[in-house]
Amino acid sequence: MPYCIGLTGGIGSGKSSAATIFSELGTEIIDTDEISHALTQAGGEAMPSIVAAFGPEVVADDGSLDRAAMRKLVFSNPEHRRRLEGILHPLIGKETRSRFSRSEAPYVILVVPLLLEAGGYRDLVRRTLVIDCDESQQIRRATQRNGLSEATVKAVMTAQLPRQQRLSLADDIIRNDGDIAELREQVIALHQQYQSYSEIKAGGGDKSDLGSPV
Image 1 (tube, rainbow, N blue to C red):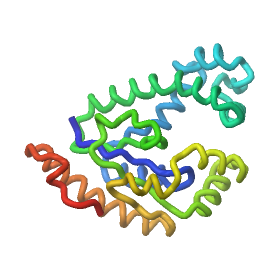
Image 2: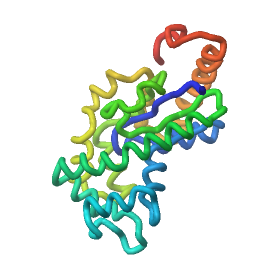
Image 3: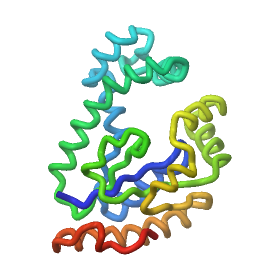
């Protein structure tokens, strides 16, 4: 099995940007958001159960999940959110574990937005990487990138772990308050470390051999 790094962070922190750079360096990426999108496309495996649970009003004209409509539902009623998670999380977990078990890479980056909140991959993840930035940056990026309102972004942030608690649970932290060049520099440094960690694992070492977090 590959050495597994769990990558997470708050909305707008830059998880996707960091994962893209890791991918460019040759790292295998398993992104649970990408898996979720595939499950909720037209004809996706999750759609029949979602329609049965929430009705046709959450289906877009093309047959995929209407994300804006669903977002409005889940943030207005915690029970709706739990119901959606009950449909999606087992399917996402099944596909994630299938991809992981088939991987022949030295190490894998597993991107999970709610990695620390849900705790569903503790048996796979050997080390947790948190992408972090100021909360004002999170709001600015998320509103510009996805066209979300500030109120919606703040609602998502409230549903996630508080920033300081997330940081306290991290093994490694990338600060993403600067430009893409600064982000790339930090990713390259960690990529080199993770390669060495996977070599330790292959040689029979364990996490206690890895030294202190960066």
